[in-house]
Amino acid sequence: MKFVRRYAQLTPMASSKRIIWVMGVLLAILTVLGPVYLLVKYSISDGASINTGGRPIPFWPLHPTLSVYGYLFSDRHFYTVLGNSLIIALLTVACSMLLGVPAAYILGRYKIPGRRLVLLGIISVRLFPDIASVIPIVEFFIFIGAHQTYWGVILSHTLLALPYVIFIGMGAFETIPQELEDQASVMGANRFQTFYSVLLPLAVPGLAAAAIYTFLLSWDEFIFIYFLTFGRQEMFTLTLYLNGLKYAEPQNLLAATSVCLSIPVIAFSMVVQRYMVAGISSGSIK
Image (cartoon, rainbow, N blue to C red):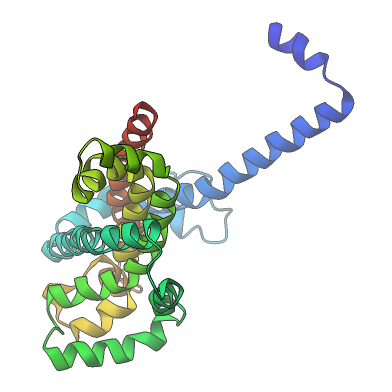
């Protein structure tokens, strides 16, 4: 009743703004959850719900079934590509953070000579589309013998993710007050201690966002791993596995595989989000 009285006291202009805001939120939710609903619905649909014979497509499957998931989980190759995707994505995150965080700290906290030129060189890696940059990179990897290897794929994904990690990390480090670093220096901490104990915990929210983006980039990447594996199926990831299911039977196998591909991304994002919250809390305490 309290909410009703408060809503009734709103002016007509305020009421219209509230309605527009609610409609915008509902539209955003529908835009995000609509494809997820269709993907899940199609993955558990029975044959009669897919091939309706001209009848209207049902809002929900007539006889929901998990048989396609059973068919998918019985494929041993699926577990291989799932493991490959997880290993490559996690090692890409590790390599990108190990290389990108120190670079972001130096570029964000110190005015080094030629800083703008260095930043331009870093971001230039992403100025070209992947289909244009994949050829020289694959040629170089063939020259050094890194093609058809897991480390070749990981390094190529690290190359793609590193500019974003550096620029996101720079933004995180630049927002930290210089006074904190000065106080740590007065108390006897060296630069490494200041970086590890003071600055790094405060930059965790931004770095966690960079880690999530890096994981997504590596998890969804297709072009580089397609050319670097040279058809070596034991190195296939889920994106290459999906590419081979375009015309596979049953018809909703592609949808079920896409659902399985999305779950690790959601799980990784939820785990890393905890560190984002922890970083914000530690920043407020410090």
